Length: 533
Image (cartoon, rainbow, N blue to C red; front, side, top):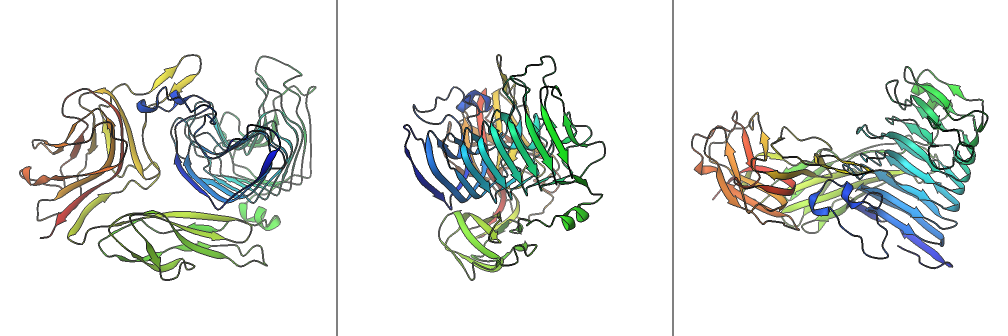
């Protein structure tokens, strides 16, 4: 949503789900590492970022609530505006390589963010990642929010909350910062002015950062390594009545700015020896823990769902609300009881389904995704690789991809793309004649019949054929759609490979058939099947 003129507002964004929106980072599409996205130009008048929920311009009274964003380059970006309210917005599992930085609030005034959960809300980006970035907020209140599990991706920062540039008046109250790779809170101060009148109170800092991190601190105020500029190093704030549990070698607070130029005061902050002791002393509401269960592949259209929910029973006055939902699917799904984590689901037709299990305690809510593959009834699954586990390649690896990735002069580097996230195995090849995905240790499953290899993928390379090889046997070629803009399912009959020993011999999926190949493969799944006639 883009507001082009002042005076417009009163916008409500509610119960929305944004996912798999990737590619543009800091107005630079070339940072993605994806060849087909290189030099992409955003439409005139659009916000040049790939974000889940985007609101830009001189708006007023915008409310975003009960919404979910995952696997996006930016979970959300709100730029400009007055009296913004973010309530119960969750950003999680944003594992996009090169362009997944953080949600951002930029230039908002007299605004509130409450009851939000940021759980691995950014992953990898050249200039750094955080749970959320604040740029120049004026009178911003953040309360009862959780910032946790920002992963280590060899990026800068990787903490919970980042005061990036400027601002006057920010209150952080009753928030939790837990298990982030970097500091719980950072106050930057390299090229832009630091914020003033910051208050951090009644919040919990739990084992963020580590002694080997560049800034081994729970709350870290930057200082420029060479320049002492009062227009930049100008931050002021108070930090009081917080509780913390430290990792070895980590400090609670460091101010690396020039002491004479900044003014930070601390009082009544308490260190606890255990997480349990901290949470007993500061029993703030915890987000429900939701586990939708293991992903399912079956020929049975009626499936038992074995979700689990744990909640701390806070707030005492509220009842826990549980709900199964269908986010994507080949057809309708009927739940026996959608309000029960353990229930049966009836799938109307074979295909791929993405279900979401959601739990809300009235203040905070979280969710988990379950992928269900309903197979045709005449098939038996020997072995499947669904690639639904984040950064888990399930035994597969890559070979001979060519010189992927590139450097943007005077800016940074787009690193090679070869990872699993968001339900896909994503691999970029460049000028490669022998690029392949390889399962080196074999299938580990036995089949009396010659199986079918089924691959669902988007082939956005110039290859018109690919090949499958097992062990030392001669490879089989199969046709693929080149420069494809959608997913296709390819089925390869492996009966032409003699002396097939799937339990021990490697499998190789060659990208192309010997020609030079450039582009991206996005693989949904690889399955070995037997068909019954």
